[in-house]
Length: 167
Length: 100
Image 1 (tube, rainbow over the protein chains, first blue to last red):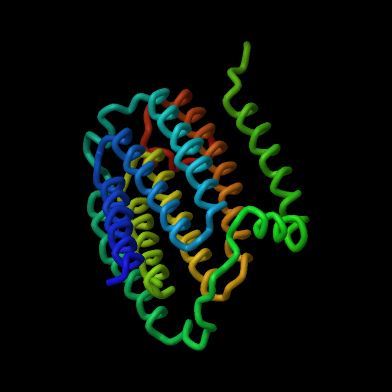
Image 2 (image 1 turned 60 degrees about the vertical axis):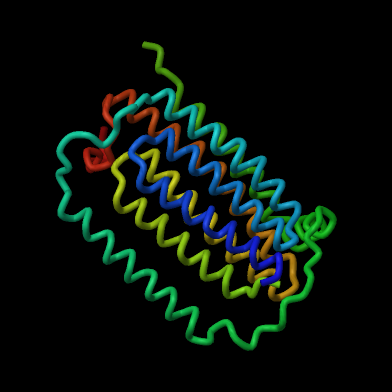
């Protein structure tokens, strides 16, 4: 057991536990807090894989901005006790478990099938800001520019959607 | 060094948990959070494969997923707030009609 493997298992338990907590807890605020733990854990995974830039971006964008947005929306909507009352689709809800199990089996079969064998051995990857920036501004220049248009469109769309119509 | 297949297996497990969240929950906010879990599972697989092949492409793709997820959450939450103003209830099962 090298330290890397011990770290992997600790982080894996944290990631799976927080994801399960999000799905099972009824209160959406608890779900949002579980989501923060989950996203931070994935940031730690990125750090372990030497993707330092992505780890920082993950914490700033996901665990920072997106989680705050979720908490803000929950506060605005105040569903406090949600999912009470009769569930009209209760029988269908139980179908989710076999469907999820089936999906997991399919994914496991794919992983065991040798699809990923024959790949080159893992090497150390340049994961710093310099390497990412080099890649983004050469090979991925056009997608990068289109991303800025996407963010602008989202910005305008959100303002248009939430604006109260003055009668 | 942690083998790549472990990361990919963990990513599959997290993805299935996200799918279950989408299928089981009724609150659209929680469904959105489950979608975030699925996106992050895909990101983990991207970075793991990029590391195995010794290239930065996987990390560049994760960067784009991050941007799209941010836009998606902003627009989605705006739609949910607009629906809540109209209906005063929050349950995806009641929203089976496309017209308001």
